[in-house]
Image (cartoon, rainbow, N blue to C red):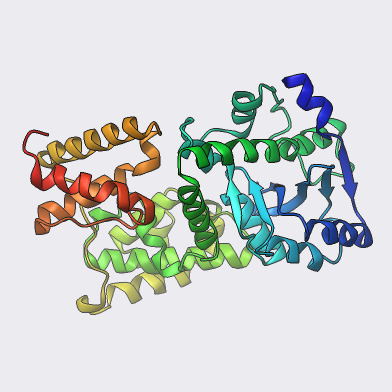
Length: 385
């Protein structure tokens, strides 16, 4: 089987560096029902990913589109958003960000083979190389994953690696489609892939970034107001300067500043994770933000964040986990496909606080259909569980 696929599928890289060449290819792709898509990018010293390569596999070739040479991507954008052309990708959340940033479009519709593989009963969060080996028995080298994709010319191993990233995706797509159809789960995959597109279309509001900071639940409302403002400031500066967040101020330092409310530059200088350069350039601005937060009326400060569940909630968490494991075993899917730890804790918190079933955002669509009654019975209706 391995040698047969090698013989039948084109795997040689074809460089695309000319606008006319790309336009001709896109005219063909616009009439295909499905193409394989991938990206290579660099994100070492920047907030945003830098597009280094776009790969397309269409069953006749593996095309490497050079964003450093192509000037007009309008025809490619049209392919990416054509509702009649499914874009097959693998673990595509970062790729979607590359498309959104560089081309200002979010590909749709998509078919993520990592998601589809989990729903088809394979392992959760399988890497591309392992999925290819699992389904078609071909071993792919991983040596070029972290190489410099912005260098020109790319090395032969890089070209080969990039081409193989899309060479087998359409074969895997067909195999997964059939398995999902046999299991009556095609709609599951389509829903989850549509959720990826929806999430990629939304950029996190800087004012909400403080909610992602670990241990923020330890702060009081005034301190949370401070954390919210300085986290939003850092997010805005990082985006404006295209700089990694933690290169500006470390996350734990945001927490320390919010907790202590410094009023003088010499206090800022003592925080680990705040560089001398940042203090010199932004010290007065940061102190103004801190004072602004500490003078806000309490009624407009953010509400307290939920604390970790008390130990006595552990039994409920365990019951829900066991219920999910049983359902996952019944469906022959990884349990992580169904719900995550934070979803379970969300439901337990709602049960403890209000003695009602509160569904997390993830429990919708097909998950709600197959899980809601099962989980409700676990919490309310079956004392033997």
